[in-house]
Each structure stands twice: as structure tokens, then as C-alpha cells.
Length: 105
Ligand SMILES: [Zn+2]
Ligand SMILES: [Zn+2]
Image (cartoon, rainbow, N blue to C red; front, top):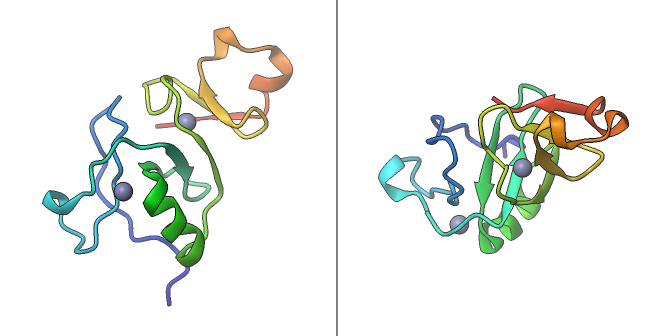
């Protein structure tokens, strides 16, 4: 089985809904409120998932990092903070933490 999750099209900015779909079709997205923000790979491909589908992801796929979804997750300019385990805007962060962060597109 392919260890990498199937990629889907980009979702609207600021929308934190579970992007899991059994069929691969956009109209079949789970669309429950996303409780986890998952970074899939070094290309900064990321998406949100609900608790139920996080369980499935843990069983089936590899991912780079994850953290509980917060308000700044998925917003333009927000940085993925590996150390801080969240997304946040650079101005709100101490320098040491922002240096370990990557911009999420
Ligand atoms: Zn879901
Ligand atoms: Zn996030």
C-alpha cells in the first residue's frame, strides 16, 4: 500500500474542515470540523482532519508533523511551527521559535 496519502486539490483558505474522502471526489469530503492540522510532506502540503480520520491516518499513512487545529491554522502567512506544535504569525512569536518554522502555503 502506498504510504503517502493521496493528494487533493487545495481547500479554501481559513476553512478547517476534514478533507478525508473515501472516493477521492471533492463532493465526498468528510467536512466535519477539523481537530488536527496535518503536514504531509516537505513540500508543505497540509490539510485538516477530524478525530475519527486522524485515527485512520495514524494506521494507514505517513506524515511529517501534526498539531491540534487552532485559529491561525491555514491562514495566509501563518507559519507551521514544528517546535511549537501549532501555526502562528511570525510577529507573535519569539525569534527562537520562528526560526524553526516554515511558511504554510
Ligand atoms: Zn473526517
Ligand atoms: Zn496548524
